[in-house]
Structures are given as C-alpha cells and as structure tokens.
Length: 425
Picture: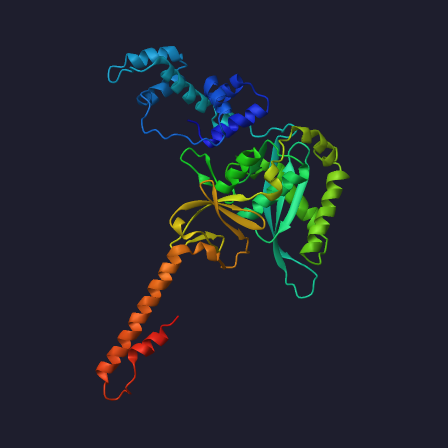
C-alpha cells in the first residue's frame, strides 16, 4: 500500500498528461498498481505489515550485482543457488524488489534535475516574510511587526500578497484559499518550504510529515503538496524573488497610515505589477499569461467561500476542547473522545465521527472559556449536587466540633437549623 505522498505524486503526474506506463517507469511501481491507485482515494490509509521481504537478505549482493551490470535473470539464478540461504520465492517478487533498488540508485542527488519551468496551471509557490519596525503614521502607534504572505504562479509569474499580524496555521490556510479565489482556480501543485504550519518534519525515509490541516486542505482542494529540501530556497526561486520585490519595490519609500491603508495600497500595487508591468522573465504582464493558465486550473470546491479547516481535538475531563488558547464545551458524555473540529471564519463545528455535536462562535485567542449550558447534562448536575452535599456535611461537622470544645460559652441555638440555612444554595 502506497503512502499519501506517493499516491499524490501519481495523481499529479496523471494530471500532467502522463500515461500509466510512464508513471510506472518514473515511480518504480507496476502499471497495474498505478491504475489501481488512480481508482482509489488519494488519502487512502496504508495498511501496516510487519513481515519483511524474502529478498531483503540479498541486499548487499544485489548492490554488487548492479555494479557489475548483471541482468535481473542472472541475479535470480545466483540467489536461488546461494548455499547459505537459497531464494525460494516467486520470480516476480524478486524482480519487483530489484526494480525498486535500481530506481532508487537512478534517483541519486547527482542525477536529479535542479530546475525546470512549469507548464500552464502547474506550480504555485508560497512563502512568508517578516517585516519589523514598520512605521504607521497614525497617532499613538509604535513601530509594528507585520508578516506578509506571498504567492506566485511559476508559469505566468502572477503575484498575490497580503499583510497580517501573525503566521498562524489558520492564517496560512485562509491566505491560500484567498489566493485560489484571486486566480479563480486551483493549481496542480503548491510548493512551500519547511514552515511548521505546513510540514511537521521528516520521516525515516526523508518524506515530509504534513500538518494534518494542510494535508486535509490539499485533499479537499485537490492539489499536490510539494516541499523544498531543507535550506534550499532556490527550489522556489519565483516566490523568493517576489519577497525581495515586495521589500524593495512596494515597502521601500512608502508611508502607511494604518493596517487598512497598508492593505489598500498593497492591492493597488498588485493591480499595477500584475496588469501593466511586463514580467522580466516572460516579457508579458502576468495577467496576460494568467488567462492562458486558468483553463488548466482545477475548479474551486463549493466550500471555498466558507471553508472550515481541520483539527483533531480531545475532550478533557471538564467536557472541553482546546482550540488555540480557548476552551469550548461539548456534550459531557463525550469526555475522553477524540473529535474532529472544523474551524470556519466565524464559527467552530465539532463532529463525533460524522455527527455534529457542538457549534460555537469563533473567539480570538484570549484564554476564553466558551460554554453552552445545554452541554452540561447529567454529569455537571451530579458534580454540583455532590459538592453541595459535601459542603453541607462539612458545615454541620464544624458546628458539632465547636459545641464539643466550648459547650458552656456558646448560646443555645439550633445548630442543625443554622447549618441548613447556611447550606441552602
């Protein structure tokens, strides 16, 4: 069973117009495997297997045989004749194993292409950049730190830029969706660096471990997520040049009153550089070549205008889920369950499997506790009743101790009535 990145690569190459045979040759898998993957969902989960291949014991010998340019048939003969552990498996299993090793050797870094131009609709490169000490002329504002999201299409060089006060995961996803809406479609592949809001790390095979929310967005918007090698910004040179262009051409020499003025001037600047100014790389304004790209884009999904990004949450003992720094209530019987949250621009929807169990209005990150009284249920009432009974017993015991220690100094009152009055909650 292939993993997500392998399956997404197969879908991506098919979208580029490759045949199943070409994809099989490139990826090292059988053409029947390619056809099966294209019939399945791109995010189908792989089944884990503990067993190892019977051919694995010949790894060292296979490496030597490949260096000697032996045919795979001759390798199989030598493996079957091995005196220590003769190979007793099927021919096809041996051939497939050798083919994968041969393919991996061909993909050594020295043999990989370092750069290639995209075709219409293929690549969108994205990045973040920080701007410190941004002067805003509005009275009472100190120099500010702002961040801008930059995106650039590889073929047309069309540019998208927006300024923000943070680089949170939700901000990234909202920016990417806004960019898709601006260009009126979804490119085949989105290239990013190793930002933590997109890539959590690398696995033992050096494959990216995607942030679940980012991977879910890629699946639902049907684009192939791609990532640069660590410390290899040259692999997304188009957007790196855009970052320099924003700093040197837009921010330099301009003044801004406040964030609203900053956003308005940025939109006006983008209209000018996209529609009027020819690109140095193509000799045409980016908007002209964008028109060539748009027919090749994938369609925007229906949920694009009100997309709720994905998060997995666990219900605490208090019947709360944590999103950002806030705590939102869910029905008490779900305590300890892992739930799915969909975080929209103005609301949060929480699901147990496919069932909607809670809806809350979004709050800014402010350590707030957002409680729906209908979620308390029997558990909260039981806890309140138990606490009230315990307090009542404690008060009665305290008055009894006082009478026992100081019986003559106390006026004769009804301790039971007094305790009852004190505990009437």
